[in-house]
Image (cartoon, rainbow over all chains, first blue to last red; front, top):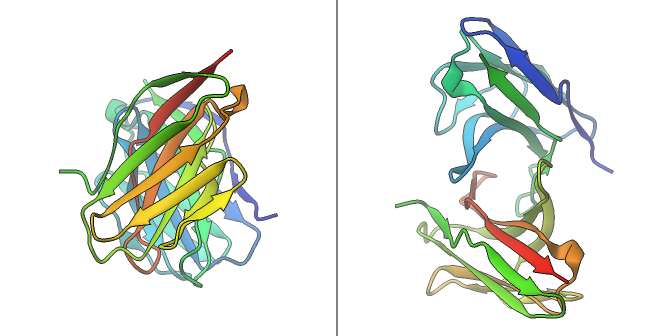
Length: 113
Length: 109
């Protein structure tokens, strides 16, 4: 079974803090993605990566950065957390074969106070 | 206009009912299509892929109409355990997936 593991299930951080969300997959997938999910808005793509050290902006990259130093790990960084970044963050991975869906991690519910 | 649109519901149906969800997409170059299921406070999980010829998996049937750019999901003989949010997902190309906001289904005894 493909496994995508997110380091924290729940996280509470203060405004202005630098926040790291970690995601690790164990199936040698090339592609990794970070989404946030908010009620009524669905999943919105923040950043994605098709290869090690490669990153591309998604639809809402502002206020975020990412790091992919190893194939299995994709980190999302909130440079200076703000209350409007309170959300559910979902990491996903997939292969390059195309036409195949994503596998998601169990999500990190981040609250910024 | 959102790239993938779904009726948010909620759909409240009795056990045993048949229920159908539709989804429309705007990018005619989209290449592959999926339905995901998401339980409350859990991650989305792949329910089924959607093929042009239509496909069935037990009580679930998915259909794709490329000409009209819509996808459907039919659930027959609804079970209580089918209660969830169903996400329509469109793969533009090269794994660039777009998600609908989801349709919430509640199956009642």
